[in-house]
Image (tube, rainbow, N blue to C red; front, side):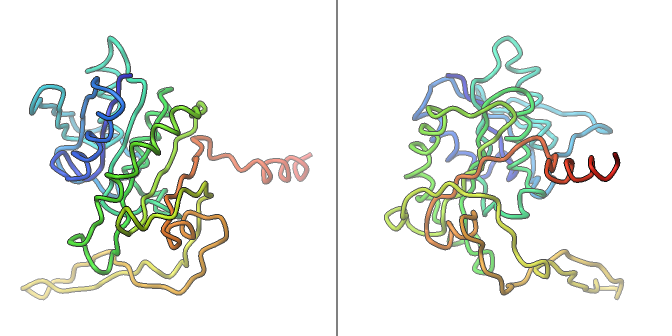
Amino acid sequence: MRILITNDDGVHAPGLALAERIARTLSDDVFVIAPESEQSGVSHSLSLNDPLRLREISPRHYALKGTPTDCVIMGVRKILADRPPDLVLSGVNSGQNVAEDVSYSGTIAGAMEGAILGIPSIALSQVYDFFVGRAKIHWSCAETHAAATVKKLVEAGIPPNVLMNVNFPDCPPGEVRGVALTVQGRRSNDLMHIDARKDGRGIPYYWISFQRGNFTAGHGTDLEALEQNKISVTPLRVDFTDRPTLTRLAAAFE
């Protein structure tokens, strides 16, 4: 099995090295193509107005000046054009990709591009407490449980135009309470705000920032699973069509 790995944290991210270790438990035929620098929050963007600069940093390891989507396209259509990968792994992301994160995530986008290109694809993320910081990430949780989870998903089969979104809880590996098959959750809509500041010359600038919010994780959601120290596995569709609304509108426009 040929595996292509990408991420959105950049080519030097610890989660990328972890993804390669996970992949090598399944196959020796592994290629890594990751962004030259961090691309968190770029979603499914393409570099259409800038050239893609590619450099080989070691055998089968490439850095690309572009987005995770660019990396997957470069891998499938250029570097591995003679024989495309059988599996795309995107991650392991530093931080969760659940609920509305899915709309912004470059990690999800890497897996989504793989699905669009007809390749079974899995996004992997390791949760940590955003308000505590990255110094306390339980990488050992994904290290311990990811290979078995990925193998089971591959054996079960990933349908066309579907990608798998896997999130590992913020806990040591021994405290994981199983795997939950989940739906995409929804947080409170007041978590994001604008942090206004001034530079040394008194000129204003702004950061998009986040705050703790009060909300109840819906039953069966990715948010609930992670609260329960479970590995969340959510199948996501490339097709965004809301079919119930389509049916309702069809009646309205008759």
